[in-house]
Image (cartoon, rainbow, N blue to C red; front, top):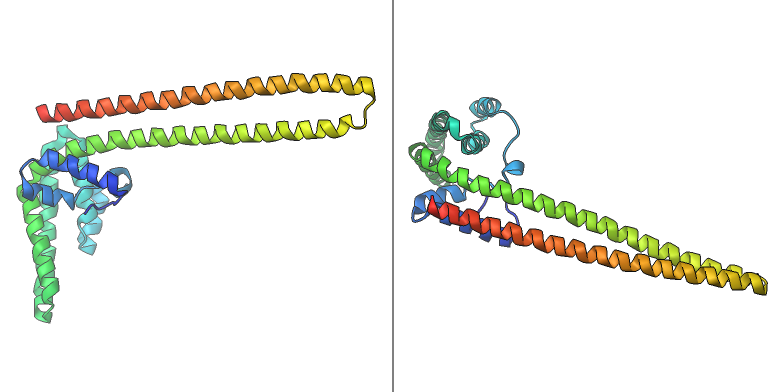
Length: 248
């Protein structure tokens, strides 16, 4: 369904968001479900819109330019009128290119290709007629997506930090174990007094190691609690944004 497919759960969540934004407008929902990117930062070209438009004129593929124009129009409300005209112009150029291709494949008797082009032409006509509605919904959709992508990046960074800390802890435990084993070997070569002092030192080191282990456990608990707090806060903020969209 979506241009940039992610996990099934994410698809269902974004499908629900888009339905919420489109309301009862089935045609708008159908069009946008095939036009918007789940991850606009990854799915939309980084090239300038002018370059994409120029490339589209040469290749006949207007998709990347249209995607870029919708995203930029959604992110720049002060320039909404300009982007509406840009998108409508791209739509007309795409329609013209597809109509020319349609004439060619009709002569070749490629009926399936003709039907596909007719559907695409109708989609671009819809885009030209409903550009303002498309940008309005895309704006709310992409705003939410960018916030959630930021949350995902934060969770990933915190997860990597936890993994690093766990790896450090494992290495520390392994080193402490190796030192204890080495100490036992050395004590076998010691005299009575020397061995007694070494055993006292071992006890002190074991107590210190236990204290460090306890401290690390407390740090883990604090990190887990902070992660839950952040998750609850993000959930509350998502609900608040949802209520705000309903009221707008």
